[in-house]
Amino acid sequence: DSPCVLSVDSQNQEVVLGQVQKSVFAAVGDKSPAKPFEIKLEDCDTTTMKKANVSFSGVGDADKSDLISVSTEAGAAKGVGIGIYDNSNTLVALNGGKARVDLSKGQTVLYFTANYVSTLATVTT
Image (tube, rainbow, N blue to C red; front, side, top):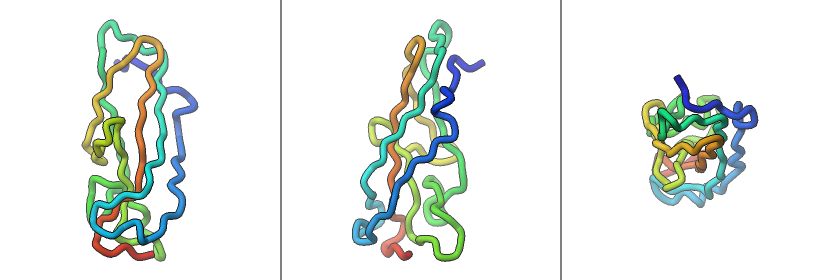
C-alpha cells in the first residue's frame, strides 16, 4: 500500500537542462547549473507511514552508472551524465539509490535538482 498518490501534474515530467559550454567541465565531477524540479504527492495518509523512499530508474551512464546516460546515439556528448540530487544536494544514485523523505498529511512536495555531471576528464560533443 502506498500512503500517497502521485499528482497528475508530476507524471511524465520533462526537465530541460539546455545546452552547456564544455568549459564548465574542467574536471571529473564538475556540474552544470542545477535545474530544479518537484514531485507532488497528494492524499497522503500519515497515520501508518510518515516517510517514503523515492528512487529513479533508467539507462545508466557508461562511465558512471549512478548517473543517467545522456544518449547512446551517434553525435551525443561523451564524458557527461545527468545526476539527480535531493534537497540536501545529495546524489540519488540511479537504479538503486533512494531519497528518504518526510510525508505531510494531505499534500507533500518533494524538491530535486538535475545537473549535467562530467564523468571523464574531457567532455566531447
